[in-house]
Length: 99
Image (cartoon, rainbow, N blue to C red; front, side):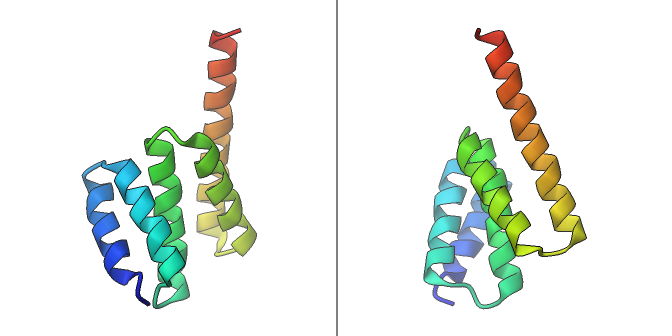
């Protein structure tokens, strides 16, 4: 549970839309360990959103796929599916506009 301070600071940065900084702190918090599996799942979820917000779509996709693999519940699975579709749509749009 040494990662809890990093997680809490990252949540503040995320709320301020400082996504790149939040994502790095969230990754650190997970490496250091979090006190409960629910907080660990939430850290992964917020990191996935933050990575997308920091224009790191590939990293975001990887994290959403990891969340789906955890089977953390139907609501989170639906959110992950939505984000994966959003990322795929954005990639397709970029490809179409830059042939």
